[in-house]
Length: 198
Image 1 (cartoon, rainbow, N blue to C red):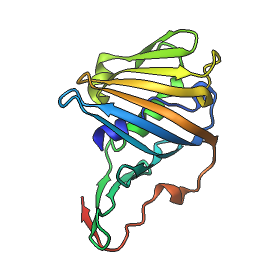
Image 2: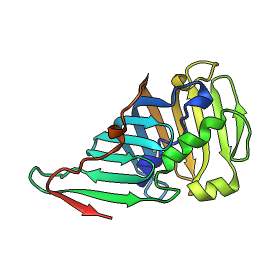
Image 3: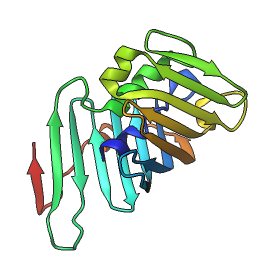
């Protein structure tokens, strides 16, 4: 799940002309440098500034990750009906959710700053993160591919992320919506018969 969550990190809201609250449906693949195997998944992501995020993975295995900026829940549904699911709860800390931190950071836009450098092409933007930020958040580069030259947030179609260990993740957006969310969207109600770890 560590890489699954990280694979979604290169989108922003204000920086690319988007709202501070949105929902996307996605398909993503991650190739392990260690095993050379490709893992794929599908799901839905909801984000609200600042630091609020919910990711619902539907395929291949049901997984839910929720963070309200102060607390996070990582829930894995049971493989067999009737067995207990599992939830891991984390509280506090600057890196409670790296993805939400990146969404917040990328408000700086597609221009050079102290956190990353930007190279622009017709329908692409390559973000190269600073050494200090790469070390802290475990990412070297993010290549965003847009459907046109305007490079607005809702035109991002694909991205390729390179992590500090040189592993690469590919991510595609299948739909995008500007949506407001109630605070309860970023809270997780733990189902009955669930093992809890903190």
